[in-house]
Structure formats: structure tokens, C-alpha cells
Length: 457
View 1: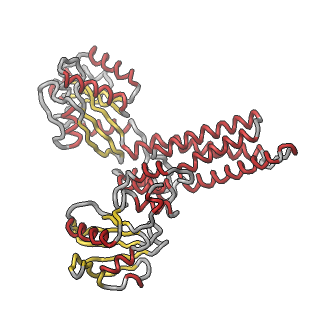
View 2: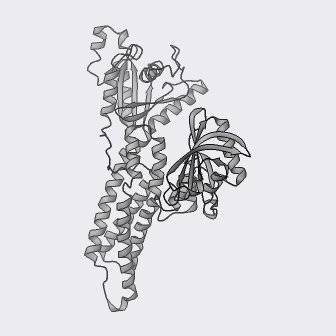
């Protein structure tokens, strides 16, 4: 059995990032958190302090003052972990933080594993599993939409409704199984019309959540946007212009970019992950050839392709052929005519019949229109408090399996199959719903989820 379940020991970890800062916070949680802190704290008696009270004093190690600190006491169950907790605010010197943590570990506290504080909050019933995962999402949110979506989930999101629907399924499954005990007497405890209405209601709700994942995944993880085109089309120059910094090496020599370069930018509240790629061409250079192959792989996985055309070199036939290749990928794309600053007015006019965004990446011309056209490919409204969005791939998979089980129940009701088979499919649906909130879980799943948390959370 995992050590998280077999130990009730007191754990300790810094709750703020490593490095020099004005302040740092150190967390202790467990049965001895308050008593251990009281042994080394000079000031108020922490063992007699009520919950949610603050004291100022010194942390001492056998008479040697380590730092002047502010200590906050949280008594169970009114703490983040539902255990006794102490938070020590000290000066943000890595040396001070290390000394204080070493002191407590010598006294019997154990260094916390990644996510162990939140894991204890889940195991002690303060958060369900979906809410616990939302804590990590809030920490890693890079846009306001991502933060709000995670906050909605942490505050309950769809967890409450999923729990209620799952409980109704459990009740119906129990009634159907009760019927099986009276099989020879031909009694019906679970009305089939009521069951059908319930399953349809849950199915509609599940379908709505599944459909929201397309938006939720983009809001959480960003939009992978590949910048592609032939060598020297201006891909790296465009990346630098969008980022407003010299992120990629720019050269007139074809084939300069041999590997992908990635960076991020927020447009209209959405995170775009721009990927500058090697120029598409046939080459005998093995390294460049690998870069070209990688470009094609990224294009196939992209949510959007920005395809650059060097208007000083391209012909109309070139553009038509390249666009035909793009259409075969069946991925949203924008054709971008670059280097307009090197064309005469007449030369530029002949290109106007092509559906392109015309820019000069080097001169920064027309980039605002390009950004607007990029945003038009993705229609997302601002996430508001209370909005329900599925942003977690694990939740999405459980919902898909729930939907499939519910469809089998409806089919079974139409075909009037036996109660035993109906009960099995209902149990399958409730099982997959329970996986989302953690009512049904395994040690391996918990290990996988909480290992992705930072230490101290």
C-alpha cells in the first residue's frame, strides 16, 4: 500500500518557490504540526492558540535564532488538509528556509512529496478529486480564461451535479437488482419510464460536458500554431515580430532553422503556442532533412497553420500547389503573403485576388490584422464564474465511457433486455462518473495525479 495511506506523520515543505525573495512560507501538516512548532517558537504558546490565529516570534535551534517569523495556526478540521497545520512566514533567503526545514526534519517531520498536502485534503474529504486537480490548474494557469475555468471547477464546477446524478443511478441499479431477487414473482421496483427519463437527462448533460472539452482544452493548454513555409519565407522573422523579441535566428541563408523553436503569446485572452519550423524543401543535408520531417509532423498535429509565402519569389502556380497540399491536412490555416515592403504597388496588386493576409514581418507591417485573423479562427467568449468547461483529458475520457454505457442502457430499455444486463450497464456508467470525482479510484491513479503537483501544495 502507498505510503500516503499508511502514514499519519507530520509533513513539511516550502509553499513558495525556491530563490531569494522578501518572504517565504513553510508548511507543516499532521498530528504533531502544532506541537513541533511550539517547541522551537518563542512567542505565544502555540499549543493553546485557537485556530486561524497569528503569532510573531523567533524560531530557535538550541538557543540559536534562525529567523524572526510569523506563525499561523490552523486546527483540524478547519485547515486546507483537514489536519492540524502550521504556516511559517520567514525571510525569503534559501539558507533560512533550508535551516528551518532541516530543524523540523531532525525533530521528526518528514519532507512532503509533490502534491501531498492536496492529496491529504482529498483523502480527508475537503476536496473531491476533480477539485483537487483544479488546484494544480489554477497554479499553472497562464491566462485569465484558464484561471477562471480552474476556479469554477475548484469551487464545485460540475462535481456536485455529477455526484447527484451518480447517486440516482446507484438507486436505480439497486432497485433493479432487488427485482432480480424476486424474479419469479414478476415485480417491478424500478419503473422503466422513469429510468429512461433519468438516463436521457444524464446523457444530455454528459454530451454537453464532452462538447465543452474542445474549448476547455484550448483554454487550458493553449493553441498549437505552426509557422510553416519554404526556406527564407520569413518564418523566424514573423515569430520574432509576434513576440517582439529576437527569439529565433534570422538569416538570408536558406535552411537556417533546422529544428523547431517554440514560444507563447496571449491574443484575446487565449494562449497561442507558436512553433517556428524548418523550411519545407527537398534537401540532401541529413540534419535539415530531419528538421523538414519534423515540420510535417508538427503541421499534422497543429490546431492552426500560418503558412508564409515569399511574395518576391513565388508564382501564382506555386501558391496554388502549396494551398492544395495544405487543404489535404484538413487543419485550419492562414495563407500569409510576406515581404510586401519589397514589392511595388503594381506587384502587390496582382496578388490581391489570392485569399492571403499581406504583411511585412521585417517591417512589422499589418501584424495587427494578422492577429485579428488568427483570433477569428477561434471563437471563444470570456469564461465567467459558474461556467462549466471540461479542461482535463482524464475527465473527458471518463465522460466518453459514461456516455457509451448510458447509450447501452437506453438501447437495452428499447429492446427490453433483462434487468441483470441493465444493472450491469448502469453500474458501468456510475463507475465512470465516480472516477471523475474520486468516488472510484486507485492508488496508481492518485500517484499519477498528485505527482504532477509542485512540492508544498
